[in-house]
Picture 1 (cartoon, one colour):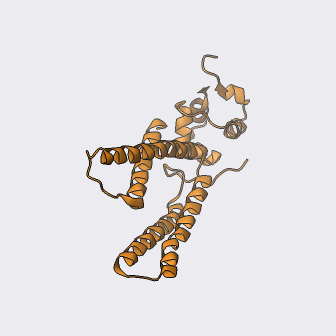
Picture 2 (cartoon, chains in turn blue, yellow):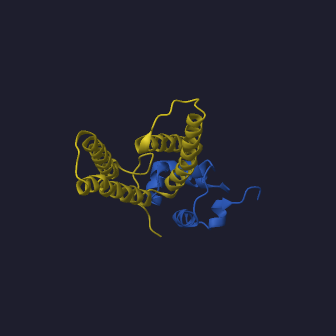
Picture 3 (tube, helix red, strand yellow):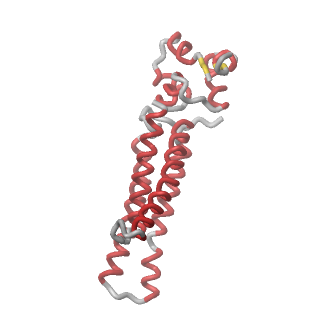
Length: 65
Length: 139
């Protein structure tokens, strides 16, 4: 799944650690999502969407869409 | 939605989280080793042997409880990593035990009684290998 997490994070000048703290996950999790090696669970995806005040489908999109 | 308390360590757990499982693991290992030594050194009555043989189960169960609690505290990626590590270690241990047993039966390997401690060591090593493998995958 493709995502805009890195772009949204860097636009706010947050480090991966900052974002991890805000989401209550480890920095490794943030990195794995950003590099698209790991797709977050639905609760975590909603949390990310709420944090960035964006609809979930604007942050996460299926591969090839 | 519950948010687990997560530190900045790579595994998502602070050092304090490791204290209880380490202590209970040590207690389980030491009590099992002590039981083995007692059985070898002394000729004990059956009721006492029964108690000594079953005693290591208590710290072992506490250890399992601590590990399960740790799994609940880590974040979702760490849980996935642990699942993959265990998913690797469990069948790999079974294959290893089967292969060693068959090689012993074929008299290619000398027949050595590995016992439960050999099995535990194999499980731990294969779990560690699975953990490293899964961590690398999500790096």
